[in-house]
Image 1 (cartoon, one colour):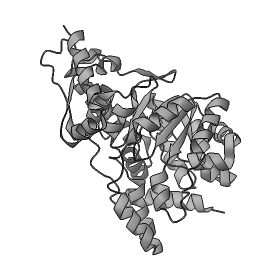
Image 2 (cartoon, helix red, strand yellow):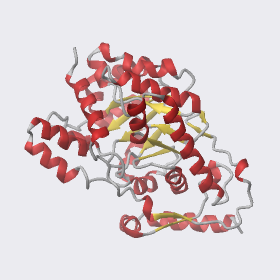
Image 3 (tube, rainbow, N blue to C red):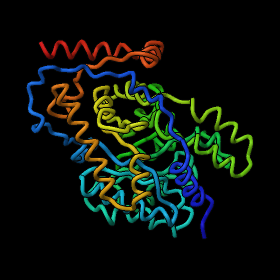
Image 4 (cartoon, helix red, strand yellow):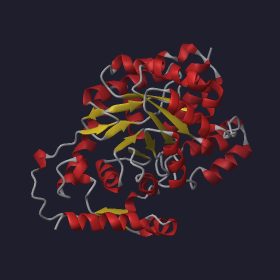
Length: 371
């Protein structure tokens, strides 16, 4: 029997496929990489391999958490996992809450590990569910897919709009700290479209998380998706809240990368990553890994074939190589030192929040290194 969480999962997927739930102001248009007219490298020698949480990736990109928990999602996860395995990249599953509520949904998640035995796979559970299921629940979702890490997702913007949303955030930080202390696998904390600020990142680092996924404003808005669910159910208040907050609330991906990248732990850039140039900008800003969901989801759901997903990711890899060649960077590590310029509203916000100085210092360091 389908539980409410499982039904909501397939509703959200269909909405993401059929409706406009993307927001455009991710900040990447305000970031320019400085062209290097004499790169002094050969494009063929550029190396995209990178390490993340002790694992080797052929590309600095993962397939972000997006689905599972409904019978129709099993084939989608199978396709995405096949792409991850063939390309040597990582992948996250969607929230495993539905499987904790009903074991009949476990297979839609377990298929990922079955198809991708050698890939980096991370489990996924919401912060509110930590209070309900505790450390034992986290252990269950890890064991369910033999995960290499676990992501605790923060989606309180979406919860605030859902009529059935969990809007009691008390105790979540302590619960995250407990998980970090008890679980042997790396713990990633990820936002789901509203970004993470410096202040929150500081608390997460102090709690012991292994990595932060900024999940910034600028890509798929699950809060906006709630507008369509509310319309279908005739819930005028939730529809109003979705219209008010769904398209204009959050910290952009670019801002979040800068605010979260000074703590010495890996940062994942998620939120509006649509091509290899976005990846290059993210890494130059301070990210260690990038991930995306909707571009791959749409391909997988339309075709139910891994070849198209693989082709899309390979295309992003070639775009990244072009950006690296044009900035004179042979490795992902060198890309972190690429010169860049930040303009427009993003610069104004960074200035007001006191983070633009980090960009200035980075540019000073780049000039000193290149003398």
